[in-house]
Image (cartoon, rainbow, N blue to C red; front, side, top):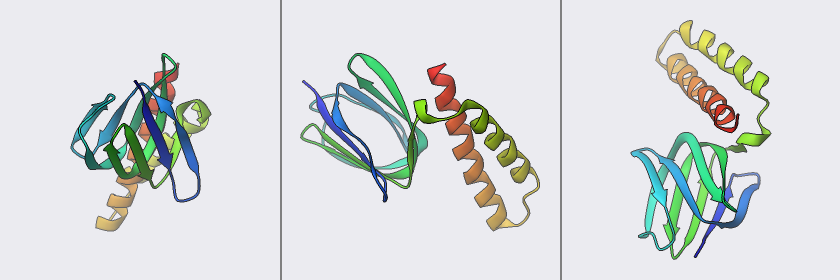
Length: 133
């Protein structure tokens, strides 16, 4: 038995295929989803979506959104998503270093919040690359 997974951003369909299971980062922690999972709707956090597809694991970086699970259908609508295999490791490391520097020099509540979000996104991209290596 399989699940139908569809990952959407406002601009494109990132994934639309049958999968065996997923591990999803929600705002309350990670959840594993197998066929016949109880129906739920949840907020998706900045993090890594792990997908078991054809007996191998695929990673995808998720940049926050929502997911709906029911009747072996998973629909994930996120602000942005990127397959781990599509991320350039050097570019991801440079982006993380820049985000860390910007976070250290951020002043004021708004700047700190924005710098923290950028840093979380950058760290998640590096983590996705390291999962592949």
